[in-house]
Length: 341
Image (cartoon, rainbow, N blue to C red):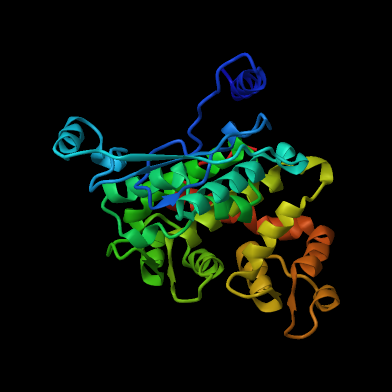
């Protein structure tokens, strides 16, 4: 039983007019009905027409179990209602365009939006993965500020298209969530500069590197890290350090350029000469001659991603050096798991 096998089975069943219709629930879970969460693309990968059916429960307590509400006690609560109401609204059949047949994510998003408009509810980018992650935040009694993002936005930010890449990304974030309280010692949902430095000293990280890393990670420049800042930095560094050890035949991808650009720019709009030089000199004892720096940097100007890309391709061996060191230190600091290629 593989994803490809399920996809082919769905296509076969949906394309045969002699077979009964195939019923799929694209959200993949139950919600409280206040919004439609991201549709899973498996129901749309066959690229065949679908018949959207909207379900809307009435009454004071929705029979659709949500979170920890399932089980015998929930059944008893449902039975104590005078009635349980369900409205079923069948929309016109939706035939995918050629673009939607080629892109199941687009197909799923368009059907989700259509059904949300019919129900009069928001179509959110949150997914089952977000619900499970948030449930863990609640179960671990962590501050709600720890979870202030949608996985779909991060998939786009890091250009994660395959299921395998997304699964490994969630693995890293779930691992970091388990280590969060060890560093966030006052449990306010943030890691302040002093907390980061103190924990770094305890695990043997040189204070100079702790300062360099914190400045790279503190995107909001408020002297503290939220979970998203730390998680995004850890994941990007993992990918960058892997590029250092496997050169992909000498090819530098656009994704690597973007990751490196974000690392070197820190909280700035572009890459500045001073912070870049500090990272290279203090962290790796690499000092570019002034004539090279002057070629790319005009005084206090910053490099955008395109100009930085040209600089990076020309001097990739030197500019990649901090990634491996930073990744090794993060492994000691947070025991960040490796992300598979």
